[in-house]
Image (tube, rainbow, N blue to C red; front, side):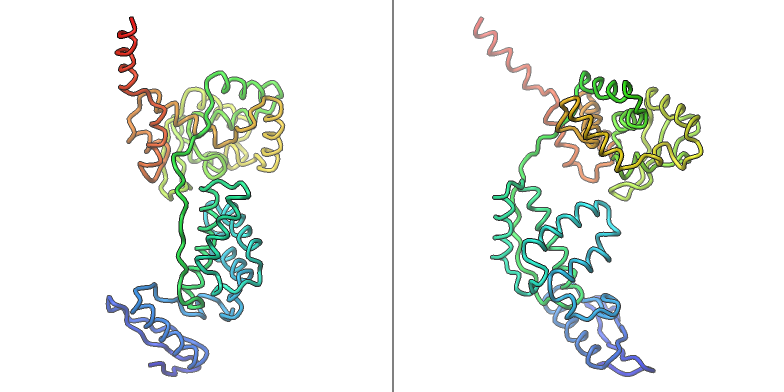
Length: 341
C-alpha cells in the first residue's frame, strides 16, 4: 500500500525472493500504478518494472508509447553505452524507418514483425542481418516492458542463419596488402595491419585503442583491457609485431598508444582506395582477425588455446574456423585412388 513520506509517495512490494522494494513517486497514483504493474509482472513471471521516475527520468510513459521517441530513449540510455553501438543504432533506425516514428508500440504484433522481416529479406538482407534488426526492435520493446509502458512482448521468430563463410588472406594476399601500404608510405596503415594480423585483435575496440602502458616492457606481449567480452586478455607478440611497436615507440611515444593517433575516418578512406587498387573488394580490417585465427587453426593449435588467444566468449565461435582444418577424411581419398589404380 502506497503511503506518503515527506513530499514523496512510497510504493511497497516484495519480490518472490523476499526482497522489499520501496521506490518513491511524485503522486499516490504513480505509486499505486507501479505497485499494480509489479504484482502483475510477478504473477506472469516477467521482470519487475523499474520505477518510472527512475527509468524515465522525468519522461512520462506517453512520451515513449510511440516507436520514434522510444528509439531515441534507447539510443541515449542503452546503445550509446554499449559495444557495437554504431551497428545497434543503425539497425534500430532501419526498424523505425520501416514502421514510422509515430507507430504505437502496443500495435506492433508478431504478424507485423514477420512482415518487417520479409521486407528486409526481399530487400537483399541476409538472414543474420535481418535477425539483428529484429533484435534491435526486441531491445526497444523490452525496454518499454521493463519501464511498465508495454504490457506484453510480441513473439519473435528468428531466421536460421546457418554456417557462415568467412574471408581470410593467404600469404600472397597478405604480402600484397602490406606492400601496398609500404609503397605509398602509409606506415600507420601498414603497422596497424601487422598488429591485426599477428594478434588477431579487434581493430577499433582493441588494437587502435590499447596504450603504451599495456605493452610489456620487453615488447613480448600486449594486454587488451577493453574487449568485446569484457574480459581482458594478454597476447604474445611476434618478432614482426615487436619490431613495429619498437619503431612506433621511437616516433610516437608522445601519443597515448601506438595507434591512438590514427583517425577512423582517414582509415576508412584509405581502405576504400586500397580495395580499388588491389581488387580486395571484400577485405575489411576484421578480415585480418579472421586471418590470424585461420593461421592458428591450420598450424595445429588446439581449439581451447585458439579460443583463449582470440578472446571468443563461446567455443561455438571458435569451432566455425575448424571447418577449414585438414581432417582424417583426407586420407580416405587414398582408398578411392588405390581402387582406380
